Image (tube, rainbow, N blue to C red):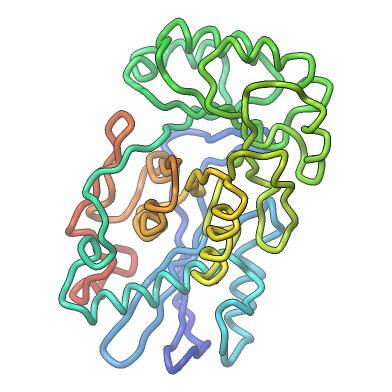
Length: 335
Ligand SMILES: [Mg+2]
């Protein structure tokens, strides 16, 4: 059920939302949980003849949920500064809705306004699954150059061996989503050096970054859960960060994170949540600041928006008919 609620005003924009849940093709499992649906808020910002939209995805890891976000929208009368909104995913969605209007006011489409390419290369994620399920994906794995594999402590080497067997050239990112113990990491790190691993993403719990200093390895580490707005990152430990708009919010915060990365020579992987094309397309404006992309979030959706982005092997293809940035597409609620 989706109800359109309109209450909040920002710089004479009227902000409203609609709840939209997207079903996934199959269950998406990572270390801390499994999902089969993605709950979102379709955020609309309306001023005069223009209405922009953005997508807000709840980020449970950071205690964000749609209930709190919608009650904030309902009870707040005026927002003066987007960067003061507590929910970072709402900040990002609102920023995207305002950008949508900005593009509409120009004579360009979103591709030329944001100077985007029509095609981007991205890592493709394999969620946690059984050995049997990985075997079934042999033909998919064979065609991938860039693979991000979600792993808890179970079957790590067996799964990596299988991937190596199917595709010895693929570059691999391991994402443990904080699911490994320090002991497990230390015990296995030398063995992991036998695979073509670009980096290991967030092996330990956020806050345990100092422990990584004690792990001697040539494999770099990437901060995801340790890389969060206003949280201190140990720049000596990590060589990579996973930058997601849902963890940083509005443009102002994201650009200050990008500047920090530049200062401390951290490589940026631009990441996303499992989310629709309405999240992924706007994120691509930050692609030029990133070394690699991990933007396959919309690939898992069964019911994405019309003229959605398409995925083929490691590539994202943008569709210039996608409704974001287009004035005529105002009937797009529910798209
Ligand atoms: Mg991650």
